[in-house]
Length: 324
Image 1 (cartoon, rainbow, N blue to C red):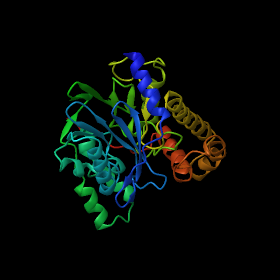
Image 2 (image 1 turned 180 degrees about the horizontal axis):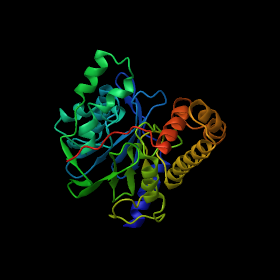
Image 3 (image 1 turned 135 degrees about the horizontal axis):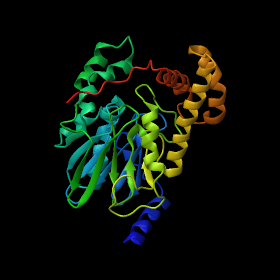
Image 4 (image 1 turned 90 degrees about the vertical axis):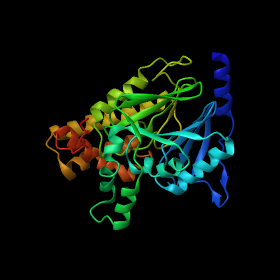
């Protein structure tokens, strides 16, 4: 059984990625078959989908992981799913509340899917998402956030979903927002990490607590390099990030190394009395030398330094968990 599963995974990686065409042009994502009836939907180079997503086909239905930052991309994903199978989409899992991962929820709910997420996603989806539009947020943007469909089923530590005999483990893990989940398909050694893993891409640290995040990542990188069929989280060898291409354990380690390096560099600069622009000026040269080729460097390098500085100095605002 293990040999057959390994052969299947080797086969899917040796074939070309399935870059499908929508009726009106190219899709806003690239579909990649990453395991038996498991697809990753990787945002295109222009960011038309806003983030990554994916789906898993089981015996009696489909589970979708995240729904992009707009309904057009979600509709395109739904159309692709329907081209592969006539089975219904039973579940949608939101890995966290950020708008680029949840804006297409309603597309799937209108087809009968149940939206599942950590209770913090439901608590924050209509409030915390407003900050991403800045002080000059428009009435239309406020209405868009208000119209986001929140999870209808929530959990504290995790939930197990079944698509017939296929088991999907959803597990709450801390770091990126304080309310993140990963989605594991144990029979295939695949984990959809949401934004707990960014593949050669600088992350958004606006809500992050990197001390918790590094603990979470260690649960992936400290595991044995092999995986056991039907084992639970985190035994895996295929990791789907929230942003960037599909990766392996070495790629997760590289991301872990990024957060470790940034914490150390900022801490050293703060010990020398650097704050604000002086902190950025001190840390930026080393950051660019080591990670300047990563995606989103121009967007997130300065905010990453400042957010890390605020975290380490105890002045950072992070979303407050809902009391239950």
